[in-house]
Image (tube, rainbow, N blue to C red):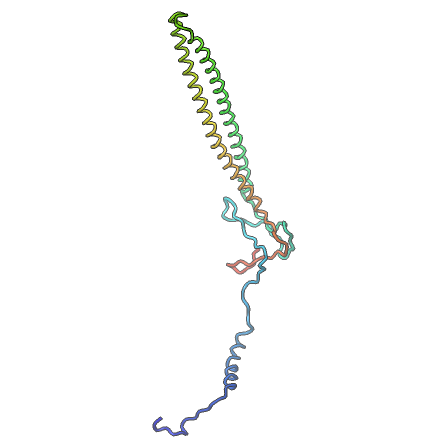
Length: 229
């Protein structure tokens, strides 16, 4: 620089090993202050069974009535958690009663329709027999009997044929009604059965069993950090 003498600037060069040594000395207090290293996280067994709270019908929450003590050795099939069924027992009983009632009503209605079909078959058989008799009387030549009797026989045949046609139509309608009601009643009974089965299965789900053998360990609540109890 202008006006500067060589003796005004002192430059000291340190070897490379000295630079690294000084850097370690500066970093050592920071490491000492920070304390021993920590490892964070959760240690889990990848093959462990995680028990989750089942979703029960008509209940937005469930209360645990009993849990196996922590550290207990459990085998496959052992009960580890028992939930309070609450109103499930009452709902299951009502659903089973409704299912049985629907089944009895369905059988009764179908039996009534089948009886009406049987009556319709008898009425049709009688109408067909009346037509056959009327045809015999109507088949008598007009010159072999009085005209009045002949006209009456023709009228009786036409009437018998109308009765037969009506009886046949009524029987067919009853048959269609029976098939339609059979499907509707079957769906109604099945719906009641599914509802009862759902309640029945929910009661079974209140008994949570171990699917694997091992130690029963309580986990930590991810919101509070405390062990579940």
